[in-house]
Length: 138
Image 1 (cartoon, helix red, strand yellow):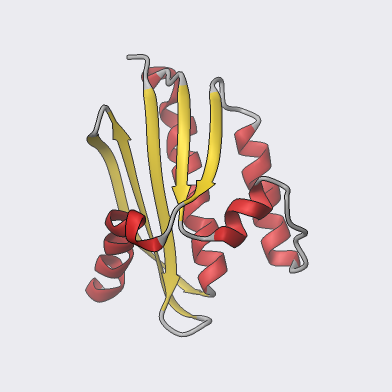
Image 2 (cartoon, one colour):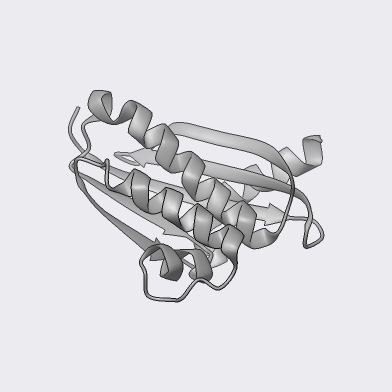
């Protein structure tokens, strides 16, 4: 299978920091091929957003050889995470810098082109609903 994947990720916390969750949805040909909804303990909103991206990247790397995507497009509603991973914004907080470095290391392992872009929250509703599902179930 060779195709384009669209990955929506979202993270959120109730309280900042507080109980946090992540949501990941992967689309191929407008079909959901993977989704994830998990709590991640106590975290800030930004940590949860990063963790959602990292979880999607880990999943992709472990399925890359089987899926053989030609291109991956990430859609996140966190402008901070998008701009930091794309190395357009400085990263001042050490714990976020560590997460960004983990992202950069993983992205180097991709065998296809990729882009990481920002979408408004309403265009990320599926991933957002998975975050709330995880937090409500706790």
